[in-house]
Image (cartoon, rainbow, N blue to C red; front, side, top):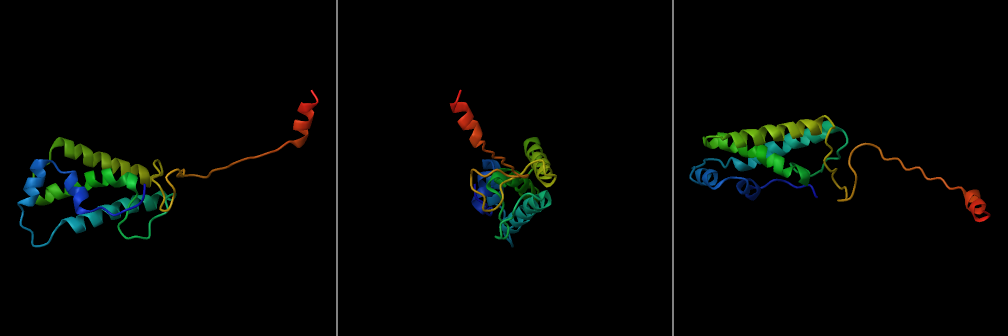
Length: 144
């Protein structure tokens, strides 16, 4: 997965119909979604930076693709608070799980993909390969 920024469509896709209707009926002097998503992405990037094993994207506010769902769970909670919609237990639980996930990233217990890594790349910690050849062993085995 690639790193990318969150957008309005991502956030709206996570809302229930009732939540989306409440949001669409609000009159805004300033659209809260762009700064809300930027703050959420910066929160995720801080967790990745604290991890120490994750190379960050140079693109401002971009996050690993594997973090998007949890980042949106985090952001939806803030949006619902902002528009005054009652927040259900499921939303609170999703927010708590998102925070726990990002805490695990910051602690190095979860390693999201580094920027520029291929989809098959391993993430986190050193990799060691030990290769040894024994030419005499092949010759010895042929003589048996």
